[in-house]
Length: 338
Image (cartoon, rainbow, N blue to C red; front, side, top):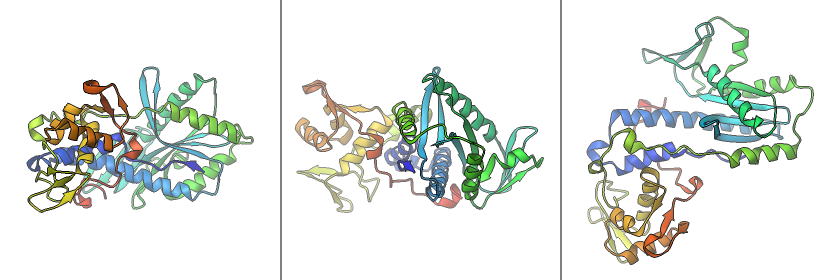
């Protein structure tokens, strides 16, 4: 298989950045944490499916994760896309706990968990919509390929009830543990290969070249004004204490913690929350430092792409794969992620 590791999306990274920047009294906002938890649970479910796929015996598969394409002035997103020699396979991944019921007559997807009943959008119809969008997108490049879909429940503790016992649903809504079986079933339905390895690779690169990340504006979405945010460089240990720059070192005078790079996370958070560029003046304001030369050295040390000169110089956000992946929001997992 040819696949790149699944990374946290800009959305998840932005939530984590916002949590770091919020003042202590605003960090535990229930709506904010539940929204983050829902997206993070989805990410964990997708990672679980990635692991299961990595053990599949078929080697001639290219995998694209979190693909987002522009189609006729609107975007559509695919959790996982498999490019096989026979076809394309869209995986729509759901990570729910409790008992799931699918009503094929009403086209409803129902969750029973923690004494509550929640109705969600029909994931099979979602996958079919993605299938249509992808087919239209491929037509722009004179490609007409068979596309199959699978909706996968990634939580192994979840039960799935097919209310009408519709035989077709058993092959469309599945547990992650049965992915291998269903992929082999799908492949057996094709008598000839449509793509050789070179054509698979060409399509893989074409799709990746047109991927567009979704970058949310969480400050606008949650109506967060500047007074809710920490100004300066917070201590990674104390969190609510600010560090001061002394020579080349950031120092927290509360816990005596020191760091040479504490400013880097603050600048990366700026890219995630405010805009994809920063100037020397904006950097000084962000870090609470008065010296333009100090700001210049700090920004230069991060090896960011630059454009413009002198006072008009802009420093640009690095690629998403360079952002730290191990800095989640710390709160009890049994509130959200089970």
